[in-house]
Structure formats: structure tokens, C-alpha cells
Amino acid sequence: MATNRLGSSVYVWRFTLPASRSPFPASFPSCCILISSVQKKSRLTRSLRATFLGLAANAALTAAKFVAGILGHSHALVADAVESLADVFSSIVVWRGLVVAATPADEDHPYGHGKAEPIAAAIVATMLLVASGWIVFTASAALRQPHPAPAPFTLVVLVLVVAVKESLFRFVLRESLSVESSAVQTDAWHHRSDAITSLAAFIGISVALVGGKGYETADDVAALAAALVIAWNGWRLLRPALNELMDTLPSREMVERIRQIGQAVPGVERVEKCLARKMGHQYFVDMHVEVDPQMTVQRSHDIAHEVKNRIRAQIPRVRDVLVHIEPSRSSPNDE
Image 1 (cartoon, rainbow, N blue to C red):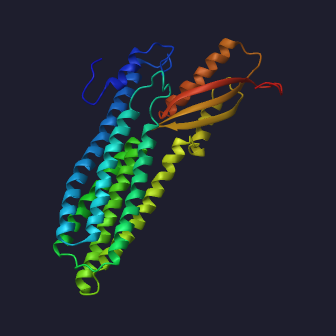
Image 2: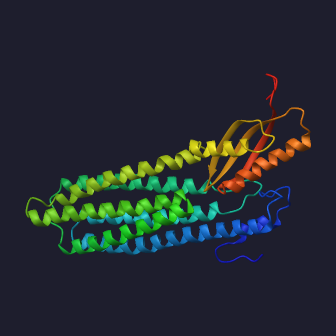
Image 3: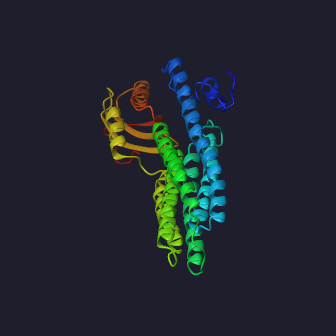
């Protein structure tokens, strides 16, 4: 199979790996494998499209806000430009995280590279926290120094910025929920944070212009308020990324559904244990299934494969299921 510019070689492995190492059960028809490959390709394409759109917009907005902030004597607008600059770097991080996450499993990474997505999300969230700290530092210093009121034209720039960033947020968030990517979702909220800082700057500059002499610091107070919002968003986005990196159990509803699917397979007497962990947008499941201890090895082997196939068929996000067979009346010394 030929590769394309987006790196379709990511999907070639599904057709070239020997059956013993293929992540698909032998009962899966080739058309199902092809559909899965196409879905993965579509997911990467949509994720990259949203990321590149944000990258281009952030680069243009950063330059515009820096120029307007310096010429218009607005500390809030300069702080906003710094937040946009962080957006540029975060989009680059997300881009690389998505590409790495789509890389197929290899000898060193037998479970694939899906963890690259929460790593990228954690880096972006950390950048939000750093950006908020920088804004607090610069705005606090500006509060102690007299400076002229911002120029009125900076308000026009901020109105355009808020409109663009809010539109970007809605588009990227919709794409992130569709492709179920934590990295893209974090990037979306980074756009929302930028819209919030721009709105805060707009309010601060408006107060400074309307209030006149003595209200110049309203611009800096607005920058401090925006920094608090950015810090909150950074922490809120960092926690789920860290949870995913720590293999936190997914929702109990999903685990219970997996357990019920396995329990419904003929020959399964009880699902003793069911564990799941997230890898990118997919899940890996480990199960202990109790069967009749007098059952043949072949029969128990077939049951294990049926459990695996049913779970993967009914929950497509489950990439693999490891089924451990236990005798239903095992002795206390059995493991």
C-alpha cells in the first residue's frame, strides 16, 4: 500500500503484520480492517486540520496584538499577545503529539504511541500556567509605574481578536469532541483562554479611556484578572491529562458495560476482574473470566476469543482485550 503526505504508512501495518501479532482477531473480515484504517486516517486529518488552522490564526493575531499593544501603550494587549504566542507553540506541540500518537506499535512500544496525546495536552496546559504567571509579573510591575492611557484604536483590534478566537474555539472544540482527542480539546480551550484575555483587555482599556486621568491602571488590572482565568483553565486541563498518563480507570459506566458484554458470552460463568486504561483515544482491557473447570483448553480458548470479539465489536474504542481464564471454583492457592 502506498503512503501519502499525511503519513498513511501508519495504517499499512494492519495489512503486513503476521496474524500472530495482528491487533485484529482472525474472524474480522478485511473490510472491517480497512474501515478502521480509514477512520484512523480521517481522525488524524481532522485533528491536524483544526490544529493548523489555529496555528495560522495565532501567528497572525500574535503579530497584530504585539504591534497594537506597543504602539497603543496597552500592557493588557501586550500580555494578550504573549498568551497568543503561547498558543502558537502549543499548536506546534499538539501537532507533533497527534502525529506521534498515530505512529503504529513497534518492538519498543508494543501498545502503540497513544500516550503522546495526553503528554501534548499536559505540555499545553503547563504553558497556560506559565503564561498566566508571566502576565501577573508584568502587570504587577506596570501597576507601580505611571504610564499613558491606551490608544482607542486598540479596542478595534481586540473586538476582531475576540471574534476570531471564539470562532476558533467553537470549531476546534467540536472537532476535538468528534475525534475524541484530549490534545486537540486542550488546544481548543487555549483559544477560549485567549478570547477571555482579549475580552478582559477590552474592558480594562474601555475603563481607562472612559475614566480618563487616574484610571490608566485599569488596563493592568484587566491583565491580572485575565491571568487568573488562564491559570484556572490551565489547571483544569492539566488534571485529566495527568490522569490519563497515570492510567486512571475510565468511567465506571464504561467498565460495567464491558463487564456485562463479557458476562453475556455463553460459557462465561462470571467476570471476576475487569480493568481498562486509555491509550490516546482507544482503550486496552484486561479481564479475568471464570469458566467450568472441566472445560477443555480449546473450548476455554474459544470463549476467550468470543469475549474479546464481542467487546471490540460493540465498543469500537476498545483496541484490544486480554482475557485470562479462571476455573469457576478455583482453590484459594490459584491465581
